[in-house]
Length: 410
Image 1: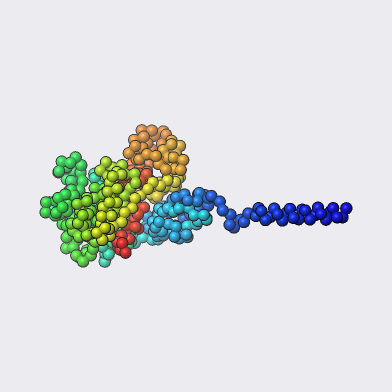
Image 2: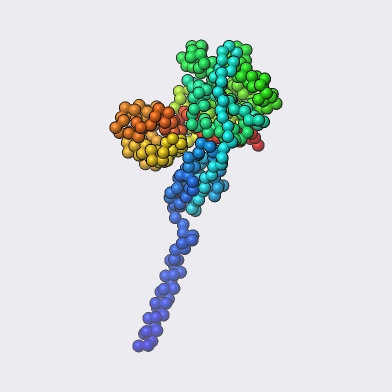
């Protein structure tokens, strides 16, 4: 009996030992799963993500008297820790990142009419005591100096430029000032050709405005000049920076002209949108911009190329603007989501051009949109195009742009 009992106990011990060896107990500190958790402090994007997924994160709304500063945490994963909107590929570990802002330099954007070659031009500007450089900001087709001065994302760009020590100058195309299509192309915009300051009024006007600031003592000719333009303004930036030998130029959503990049020695950065829906840019323009960037670098001239991709909506997105509450932003997000304007992952499925008329025509379905004033409505539709990566200026590359101005490819 005793022998049987000992035998049974020995069997149990041996069986248990075999089970332990063949099937190890879970190690809670080293468990390998197919997903991990992202925690965003002072921002958005927290959640559980599959390993290998692209994760988007955003800072909380930037106060009107502040600028975005940086992300802290596992920042080596981020594309650029200086941008308020960032992304990374989800690693096989939990990630915590924290967004921070800092107080902005106090400044006031001045407005006045300054004499161009023939007429008074609308000009908005700010000059610090000792500017690092002067950045000319250039609107797109049908735009104006006022459009840039009042646009949320351009305001963020100006604020970042000022905090980086730059002067900013915003003016407009002659056709916009006159309200007349002087070259008969059916659009009001900068005239990019011919490339000279004698027969092309827009180049001559930039020179006249620049010289006015020199004469006033706001700056001197040793201070470098820069151009940052959107769409037609981006194409004009390409030509302007080459003609006047600016320190560098930036184009948003415009490929510029190969004839310029064949010979230009001016560093140039392209910030393109992957789903650009402009008939003069689009996918071909995105591809051409990459070709021109490679053309410059092949000749030893610094150039960088960025292609902005879609990013998902999130409930607080529209509260980036200080006069839209988180509650209103969330309500509008839910109106878009409920009416199937987003996919399962909250990516917008249409551009603002398609969606805007629907929102206006159905106030009972979109009561939050109806409650917005005209300026707020323009803002939220701008945000839709930015999330869609359509043909629209975006502030997601502000710090990247300023880094290019200051150091180019160094």
